[in-house]
Image (cartoon, rainbow over all chains, first blue to last red; front, side):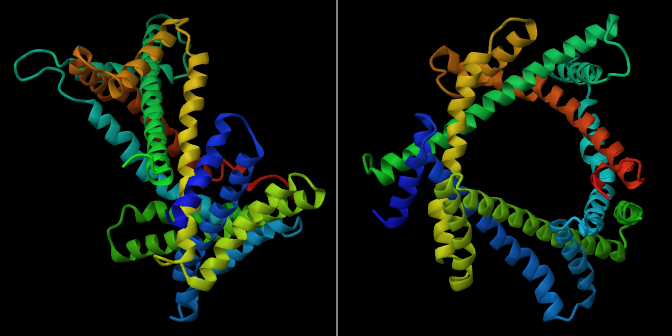
Length: 204
Length: 206
């Protein structure tokens, strides 16, 4: 067994000890994971963003206009002191503003219009029979939207529609839950397979 | 005054990014790319602010003697990654990637796997078919779980199909309505932010 597998196996076991209860071995592994993850993100951000997008083009290629994002970035450090806190609002303004500007057309196109287009489908098949699936989707979208419409009291026919909407929402939550549990379970099976095959070398 | 300047900056960048979407001119593409790069650079600096906060918090806890061994281990884990990257680089086969593959990845995936047990035990305690919506939720979850795990014999012939139909139709319908709501909500919030009506992002203080 190579040293990498041994380390990975021991750390996997350390995390799994949490199944018994919170204990110092788990806490040690957790602390190490936090530190290593932050260190990893910092290194990757430094090399893939700050070096390749800022410092190399600025210092080597002479793209002087990159001083603008550099200054905005340095203003973020204003958060370290109360007196300079106001400086950090400018780069945050750039991020929030550009994010919001991009979000308006993208959200309208990708989230709203595309979903509406996909919902409005032929409700009758070529053979003349109603398309049950398309009917269910249309009913589900309309009733769920009724549930999320809070400007009118959920009473009468509108209330019934909103109630049916909650049933569709429950189906959505149930399926999402089921798939989430299954994905976590498959990750767990992967870890067990690693432990039994590579670490303990019990199976071939 | 600084708040007004921040709002003006937000408005200007928002307007430029909104307007460039409607133009196929190379200049518009170039502006889009430049501001996207600015965004990434500022985000990287924001990340450094977060890292400094992490270090500050850990050093304070070490000084107070709270969870000292664990805090020191966190700091050691944090320090070792940049040190390895500085000495050997970050390419394939370097110690930096070795630590990532043999320390970070196994622990991360095990933590994710652990959630399966806690979600399952929480649902065992929480899922009670006391009302119609709760019964529907329980049934949908059970159908998905059974179809994906131990459905054998006659069940295996039709249950996966039923699960697939539920996922692609009633579940998809609710998901679509949620997405439409998210889209409209994001749209209005973005407009409020750009126009300076929504100013909570400026935070408190002077």
